[in-house]
Image (cartoon, rainbow, N blue to C red; front, side):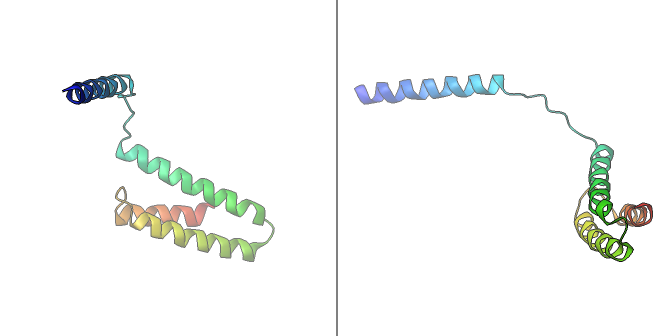
Length: 100
C-alpha cells in the first residue's frame, strides 16, 4: 500500500514538471517560407565560395580548380535539397559560376 502511494506521488510530480516545462518552453518559433529558406541557403553558398576564393586572388589556376571543386559540391548538395527544382538549380549554379 505504501509503495502504491509513493508511485502515485512520483507520477503526479513528474506530470506537474512536464506541464511546467511545456508551458515555459518557447512555443513561438519563427517559421521560414520556402523563399526565405532558399535565399539563406544560396547566401551561405555565396559566402563559402567568396571566402574560399579570396586567398587565391593572385593564382588563377588554383582559383579555377578550387571554384570547380566547390561548385561540384554545391551542385550535389542542392540536387538533393527539397527546396530547389532543376530549373532553379541550373540558375543558381550559373549565377555562382559566373559571378564569383
